[in-house]
Length: 253
Length: 248
Ligand SMILES: Nc1ncnc2c1ncn2[C@@H]1O[C@H](COP(=O)(O)OP(=O)(O)OP(=O)(O)O)[C@@H](O)[C@H]1O
Ligand SMILES: [Mg+2]
Image 1 (tube, rainbow over the protein chains, first blue to last red):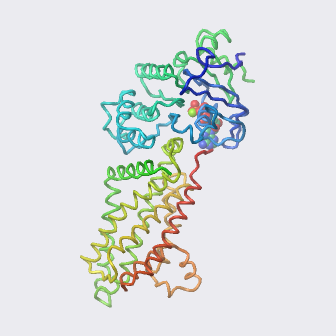
Image 2: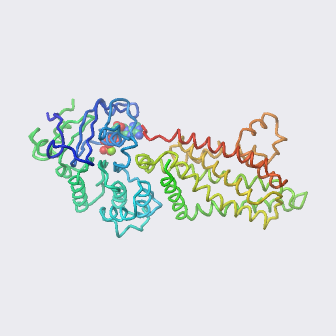
């Protein structure tokens, strides 16, 4: 069983300026009368961490707790030493909700510009993030007339504003073709190389192979934690998908 | 509160409105048409002339900004809650007041334009008699619209769907319209209903409008405006309480 928690990142080296570590201790979240997370402990640091698990296992709930928008019953979530969601953190966190949270009746550029104003950023930053998600050609199109994948990229563009130190992405690549997915994962790694802590939830197993660190979750518990290779080795599986199936189904009564 | 963010919210709300032609027409043109319709209805009634319209017109000028802003705000903010944009905004440095006052400022500006049009039509075309200063009618209308916005922001917290949000109309707005003095003058209401009317904010907006048509003394009008704004402030405060950064 690969439950040993490890410090993330290539090394345990010192955390430099702009880098954040996340500390989750004894997190308890009740949703709809059920304990979705029941005493979860987790440390996150720079690098790309993937969060995988079956639907309803609590991925979104955990990510919302990291951002500080989830009501919690117990435990603590500290980001860079501050309570998640506290004022000092709010302009350092980029968050992509599971369904694209942009205004349908505004254009891509208007959406990004609005959130840029909220963060006190200028038009240069707007152009830069629109370019990063490859939406330049559609920047003046109203969001309601975009495809699902284009819309989720618009939402991602907003999260990239201001080069956040912590990027929390809830299934940001749903509905995207393999080429775009590869490009975006390249982007996530470039952001992580620049020092950001990137947490990405996903259902797509081949994306799991691209993470620096992989968390497999079931019923609000982290079943496996390590590099993709470590996770595969720990259960003697050839692929992450096989490891996922054996972990998720193996412990079912 | 951060003025930069408040302004960003207001500008964004106005941009959304500009894109939504139909809502814009509803906000600006429909009140004028309905006021004209009312004027026409009473044109051939027993006491002939525009007497009835002179009594009802001021009430209409108070009702439209309030009702329309209530509707539009409750639906737009509900949409903002359910689409996740509110969650995203509150995860950013947005203060609750930035959000609420941004909406109030945007709809207040729209209300100023709406009031200018409605007052223009009523006074110039339909010959509504107004003794007090016309610009003060506009001030009352804007206060009244901000009240509608504040209450709309507040009730949207209790609705899960746009359909539910619209259902607050008959609960929150219609009783105020019935009791504000438009149909039966407030002094002629049964005592119990008069007491209820006295605690409903729309009554004060209607009173203010009626004062302006009858006398040029403005002290009473400002007092009524103050009451309307106090209710709007209370509505926004309640809205701030129901606006949660952390949700279940
Ligand atoms: N708004 C809500 N109210 C009540 N219960 C909820 C709510 N949202 C989620 N839940 C419940 O909380 C549990 C965890 O949900 P969560 O959204 O975290 O799952 P997830 O792992 O993100 O799933 P998916 O992969 O389908 O997005 C589920 O059992 C779900 O039914
Ligand atoms: Mg989810």
